[in-house]
Image (tube, rainbow, N blue to C red; front, side):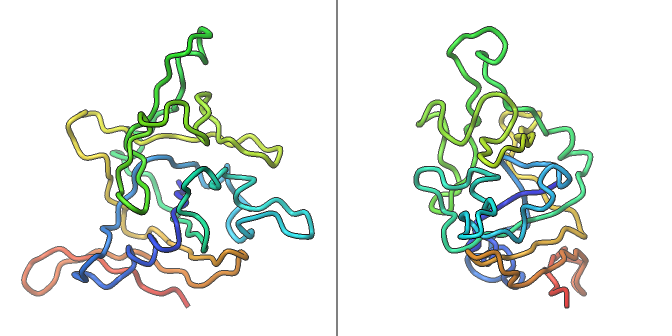
Length: 198
């Protein structure tokens, strides 16, 4: 599976274990299958002078108040049983019957607060209500929204060991790649670390 996050968030996630302000290696909100977004990582955020569609054309990450501006990161990970079981196709009722009440996922994080309800902005772009990204490059890409089975449970899922995060600047240049490792320290405490991939 694949998750696009702002570069600043990726930098917080890959800080050394125990660092103040470090984000836990977790995934939440909207995700795609890696195969459905093949060829998108490594593109510039915006369409270049060569007319190659940018990440924003493919993923619609240039929505109002978007934290995607100075770069982006892509997390590729295997779906655990928990993650696969939580993946839902985000569809509105109007997708089925022409009504106007919509299922609006309410836990997609922003960089500022990590949890800004989509319910505050009904029908908020880039959410389409039809299970596909609001792509503008002519390619249909399915999206999934991670929803816990327990509505009172956490909306974040631990990334499995082996997940890879790739960081790109706004021009699509690869800055670094890291692989998530997990283990137990000498005191028997669990830890995780993002190891640089040469």
